[in-house]
Amino acid sequence: MIRKISQLLILLVAFIQLNPQEVSYVDSLLLEQSKTHLVDEKISIFFRLSDHYNDISIDTSRLMIQQALGLALELGSDKHIANAYLKLGLLYVMTDSLEQASVNYKHSIMYYEKLDDFESVCDVLVILGNIYYVKGNYPKAMEHYNDALTLTQKINYVQKLPHCYNNLGVVYHSQKKYSKSLNYFTKALELFENNNDTLHVALTLGNIGSIYVNLDNLDIAKDYFTNALIEYDILNDKEGELLSILQVSEIHLKNNEPDSALSLINDAYSIYRKLPVGFRGPKVSRYSDIKIKTALSYMMKKEWGTSILHLDSCYYAANKARLNDVIRESSKLLSDIYDSIGITDSSYKYFKIYSYYSDSILNEDNIRNMAQMEFKYKYDQQIIEAELSEKEEQAAENRRTLILIIIVVCLFFALVIFILLLKLEKNKKTKINIERLRLKDELEYKNKELTTHMLYLLKKNEFILSISEKLKKIIPSIKVQNKKSIAEIINELTAGTSNDTWKEFEIRFQEVHTSFFDNLNLAHPDLSPNELRLCSFLRLNMSTKDISAITYQSISSIDMARFRLRKKIGIESNEHLVTYLSRL
Image (cartoon, rainbow, N blue to C red; front, side, top):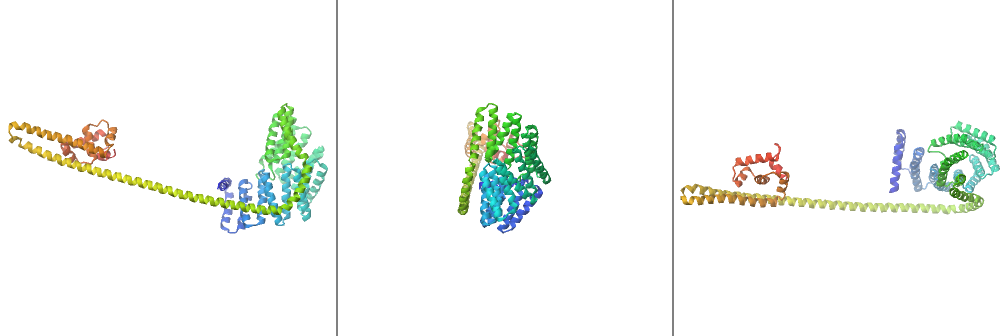
């Protein structure tokens, strides 16, 4: 899952980098792929997409080829599998991932051999030799070049023959076997010229010039470098120009002309920085060459600090890419510089590194013999490795299937848990709603009960008032000595009824509306007891007539009290007083 997400992110970043025309081209390919049901055509489209992304995004280009490889393995197409591994190797070389490049190139050889495509086998053997050469493993490089040469001569692959000669010359040159190296370069140059291969003519001229630099024939070397630079200029080959400029800078270093050398090296570095993503070969080798020559120039000027900075950068890059020869050379120069400036511990540290890699190079002859024996053994094991590779791929596919099943099961259980949680939440909300309805019904019931009780009190008061009125009417006909007693009885009935009625009402009201008076006092602390009492009656939505009956006040007095209450509370004219109180 994480790998798929990362692949989608790579595609998204690459898609953002496309201009409108490129987006249209990619869209057309994707549309074409979605319409076809032929796996072979889908694979071809992935290859075309990969080629399109070469100069835009190496990661996306590699992703396209990996998709093509997956389909090719499912289809069992050896040709597509071989080509996919070959392209993957090239893409890893472009990012200086030489170990991964080697693995993919070896896989491609295995499938090309199954197809009897020995020309492609020769091509890949030369590429593998180049990788081993860049890494400083000269025995392995020589082994692959010799195998390519033998196979090229066997199948009469004329176009590849000069490349084999040139590459063998490069290895002998690195081993300081200049005579053998010059012999192979001369053979290669003649064949390249016959084939009108201008690019490789220029490369070989530069290689021959480098031999003459090592032999201190600097004038001859300069002629070869100049001729090579002319060929590169005709081709507008920036990489070739970079190489020739660096080769000419060697002459200035030999003549102890650091400023002239630095000027050329800076020009070379400017070209290097502008090289496109599709730069052929591992860029780290060119970068290391630039850094070492820069350091040598500053060493001649005795600017030790600057030299150390360039050598440290070179050493780090070479160590990361495992370029043993470059590590050996940069560590030797660092050891010499630290020794010159009296920092003995650092000098000793880098000298140990130099000695380690020098010992490795001294053992190369023994390694070469062992490599030849190993090659014979490996040839016999290739069929077994092919079978093992297929089994490993099948096992990997089974693992992927198992992981997918586990993911699906986990997602299923996650979905079940999610549904259960939703149901629990729904049940919880249902219970809350039921409880809310119950409380609402209970409140309504208590309100009705309170209202009923109030009606009872009203009737009771009306009855008492009726008796009081009757007593008042008969007072004139009563004896004088009894009038005073009757008047006292009337007053007690009226006052007692009012006080008892209010107290009983207040108790029952607070049982139903527990926080009404607290909220009202909090909002309007300056209300009088009579105003609080009026508010409670209005909260029960009692009419003015009912309030008048229960309080023994006239209707006009209640209306005036309502008006004063409204004004004191500060309610807008368009808002109903009862509505306001019901919200408290």
